[in-house]
Length: 108
Length: 111
Image (cartoon, rainbow over all chains, first blue to last red; front, side, top):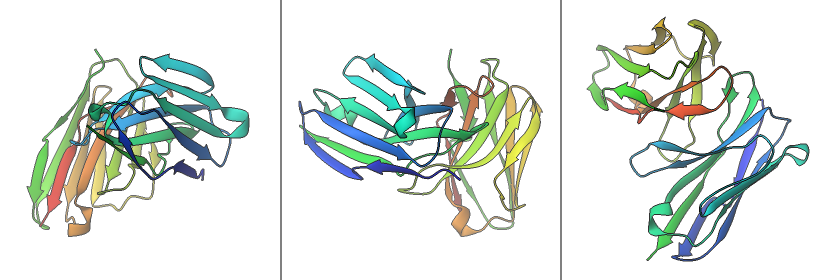
């Protein structure tokens, strides 16, 4: 099955800093989502982005499906951005496979 | 309204108990999913129902038994679980093969 690696695994930022999270996947995919998991475990949808670039406030994402990667940009980070970020490419019908995750901590 | 509701939020059960986790969505989605997440690990797909039929079973042990009574409801029946089955169980739904929307999860502890 599809393999999904995210980098970096852990990231500590000072409030106001920018960051780029990367998601590499081993096979072609139909769709891809980015999620933020808050400390209580809820998965919050950030982007549904099979290809191209999308922006939502301080966050943006780019997927280059032909090169099998996606990037999540966080600008002017805030303490509320802390948590775990997952990408989940769809490797087969209904098969969204989660990446290894990036654990982000933003310090005040 | 993009809400998936899971109950209970927390469940503690013994290894001989039988319990169920419930999931409900009213977004008209026709695919519903169960994922299992252990601490500090990514969610892992367990089951997918599409149009109320089981489409995917990721070789899950039979002590986990899914049920989809109708297009809005998804249950996960639990019987004779082991302590290593303690985890966060996440339900999700999607409009066919599109974007996934997750519930808040049910945190299960098996004693």
